[in-house]
Image 1 (cartoon, one colour):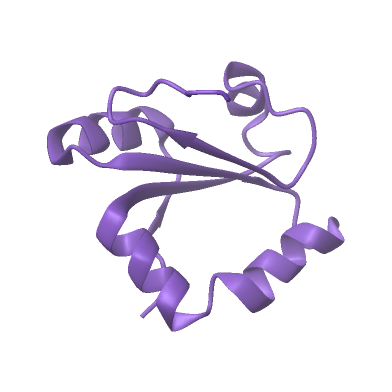
Image 2: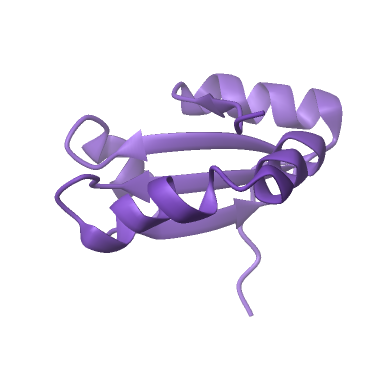
Length: 94
């Protein structure tokens, strides 16, 4: 089982609100970014990680060069950046 990554952030926000699930945003620059490539090669293929993401989150992975507007919208300064939003699309910072 692989994590179900979506691209369209507005559709992700709608789906998360309807499902009352938190959102995982992954801003990546793989394969150019070594840490991004390691997440893709070592973390996300792990069955436990994929199952957790699919069960508890609505996930979206966006490449920094393909979706620069999303990086700006959510304040991602570098890659990888992982952002968790509540079902309403709000980031809660500590």
